[in-house]
Image (cartoon, rainbow, N blue to C red; front, side):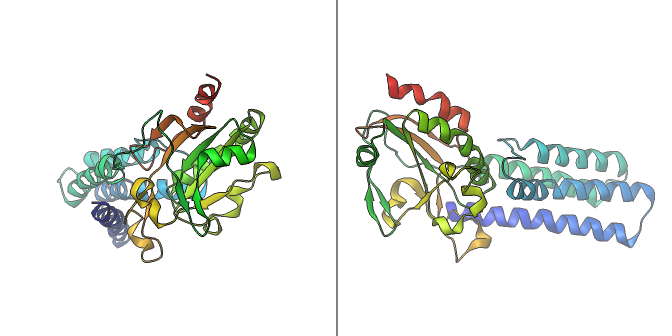
Length: 281
């Protein structure tokens, strides 16, 4: 299923880009005023989502979205409105703009959704995680070694994901508070730390430097979706971590968890901050 989602996501974005180029070519070829307005509307309609996602990728922490991707949604609807107002003959721009809206909604609510296998429940032990070239990582041992009151464990989809990058930028604001409460923060991804841009991991203070640990193959059962990485990145990257957040106490018991329903909606820092009281109960 993940492989098909990745493939159809690629086809969807390819279609939107091609549709935009088609509209641009029609404009360059020349047309009357009403037809030109319709093609401009189609161009906005088709490229709203790819440009929005590119901006979110390039400027994490400055441009963020949510489940509805309001910036892209506004562009898609604006383009569709222009097409409907200008194309009185109901030509190609009308049909293409409506189809693009369907592609947009399919991506938002299905192609970017996350399917979860049965996961460890609250009040159960957090499972050992296999780290690349390091053996098994256990939350209870980590807390004892670092004399912590508990640990937040986060799984990031990948360095290519705009929302994972945005999440990293937000985590810097949480780190000092976690240090004050003596709570650890452990980040996991399918990719090694060298694959993540250095400026995303390092903040103004050396204390705020984030470390991303790399998952090894046995972690696939729980935390990694096989063949879920973007189709364009293959064969270099095939799998993707399922975005999730876990609050674990010193004994390794799960106090709270959040399993993202969509790759574009990982847990917010405000939510993590609001759950820290559980360590004091």
